[in-house]
Length: 213
Image (cartoon, rainbow, N blue to C red):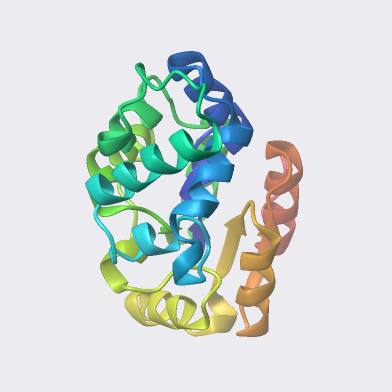
């Protein structure tokens, strides 16, 4: 069972998505990430964790984000930012990472089952699902906002293996966050840290003994 991450693997790199958001809104990655950290600092969690396990709604998170931006960057123009419905604007115009979609197709044609293991947001479901439509059907999707835990928490990897009905040693994760890969490996999974599309493809093909074209 080969599990593909969504953000940064089946989607374009996160740097590209932040750059696209800046073109839409004028807000830089630095401004946005700084405000995101402030939003959930009182919860002692990763900036998106509360959102990705559905502890907070997108609307409330967006209101907090707007307030944090006003405090940290009082001169920032927020007029183009739809922060309370963030996902629609964040994903607008974003297409799948076609190189990794092709890799997924090759893996599936090789006879492996494939799944998506993602930290994601309940209100963003229609947007990211549309982006990965070129993937086609997958055998299993495990989404943090539905199961209440997120990568790199061990529980989500156990849930994923159970959902697919496979042993941990039969799972391979492709993820752009090394911490997630390390967590998966600690539970008996194999993992490929996605740095570039070509390297991730070659490493994955070597793991599942698929010849690189």
